[in-house]
Length: 172
Length: 172
DNA sequence: CAGTATCCTGTCCGATACTG
DNA sequence: CAGTATCGGACAGGATACTG
Image (tube, rainbow over all chains, first blue to last red; front, side, top):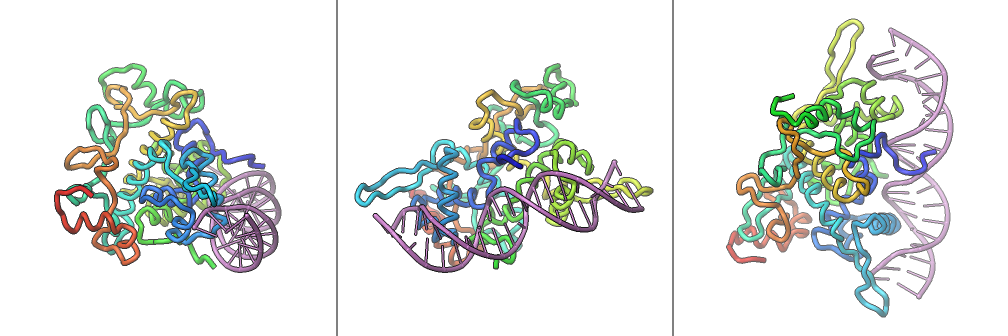
């Protein structure tokens, strides 16, 4: 009945992202890819995942454009899986999840942290606006219907859209 | 056999986060909660989700500490679901996913954007280190085994751990 | 309005065996 | 080493009916 993954308003970029990385393993595979893993059996050992499942997820990630399958030796033909630009762009999501997990699900302390590779000093990942450097926090920042929004999306974001259109200086 | 969600190295904060929000709907429900939705039927209409499934996911989110179930009227007893601090802290993940989706999966243009609510100007979400404000990008920043890392985690991050322990100024 | 109760289906995943 | 092929189980999710 469900022809393919389809969740509510498919215009939503979050829902679209989930179409690509919604499966459990996908995100962990990408995480490992950022660790530098590229080969089938590296992923398999790291994740302790059944080979058929790994194959399936890897192919899905390749098809989704997050990984590229590249032959690294000719005979026998051997392939490695490397992050594409799209895959690398997923990194902020991963780090945001890492920060969230570190804050809320590590009663025994942090097992993995983000560090400055030169100094070894731990970093504290926060999301900001690139131009202004301001923290992307409520209530200063919110979401709004974008230029390509359809009716339904626009209705969802009515309150913000108003503020945006007026482009005024009063708070909502 | 699989008693509960368990993926490879469960020390990893990303894997732990996935335990809580790994199901497809969970993230979309949180997204809607940030839109201000609080009531059962609001979620249901917005997501076009079966009521039993919504009930299941909502309860899981409450149990996981992301949402709080709060009685807002006594007779008849009515409840609303509001974000807890843990739930609100998930926002950067959502916005990072939004940014990723906007960059890669919107051939027709952006349907939803992050804006400054006062000015209506679109923001460009990027992840930085809170203290230094520096972009958390490769190769300057990476992940490393934290203080609570077990053997396996430490081995995974061997290269980075070295840099961290030496705390030196040379690059890896 | 805010769910619960049933029943059913899809598919993600695990286990295992096998191949170039 | 790098996968494919097959089988089976668990569970997320869908459809629908029903209740206070």
